[in-house]
Image 1 (cartoon, rainbow, N blue to C red):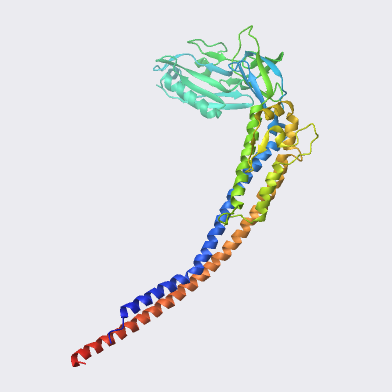
Image 2: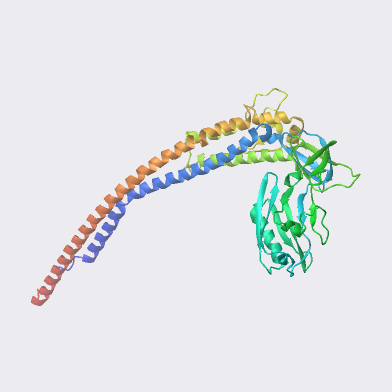
Length: 474
């Protein structure tokens, strides 16, 4: 009777259970794989959208007009950058200018008398709360400082400086300055240069007069007074002669004298010095950089599209967007736009190839003839701009094409929405299949347990029969 192999039968039951449980997970695994594929596709769309947005931004930089035109970039070269530097916008005319700097703008500044820092001269002259005001332009600031009996001169000067800083909200800068190891002065300086930054003091308590700040005379090593002040002849303003015309400015940055130019005055020239020359011209190097940035952005987006829509003819492996017509169409149209003819008059540039920009067999565009591009920028700048920025220009058409994909209601957004809907459906299907698999697995495990119990019972019966046979000698 013991010839039945109960161990093998139990092993077979266990194997069957494990295989059945694994089979129950097959639909779940399939659905999860489908979901993972869709999530991968979503990531591809996100990356593609980023690259297309970058390309659109680069194309917009090439399609601007007026002050925003990439082809209006100008360079400004100074013959002496220690005296004058300059920045030029698209409005600047390509020509030369002369600048003679007579005087730099300065901030109105005054100092107090010199005081022994450890002494108590100021507090001995009268403790208590002292008030005064400082006006700068249309604003007046009330200052109050409390001097205690026995305060050292250093303490008093520091208190006044702190009170001015707090009251004027940065419009006036004050500090206690140690002019020697044992002595110091109060320094008060307008935060703005030129006549517009002139300070006017109202010495309500007489403290400023005591300090020598309002003396109205030029300060010395020991006596207070002004360091720089408006004495009625634009002493605080910058004075320069630009193209023979005297310019007076409260700032050392002059942006109102010549249209499109911001001129920075850095140092005053000696009497009899020659004017500094400023040469304004088309900034060919920066224009080339803009073009290269545009081409790089195109190549990055185009190469990504090629990679994600390809089919490997050797292995028949299909990329994520292979067969996805809207994106295959985008790839073809992008290259078509870059290779298109803008329909300009014959004497103007009508294609990128005419200014030294061509593509290789992979579809990447680059400047392959730098000399031809330089010549076009130098002699046909308007034509080069038209090639990119006209209504039929390469950049303009590319922007229109990309808008259909990256706009809020564009193709990429629609693709993502469709994928989200599919993922939502798959999540419900996964949940349903998993519930079924879990319930069915419980049934199989219960059946397995019952069969094992029956098997053990049968085994015991056989064991008893074997024992009985051995006793009776059967």
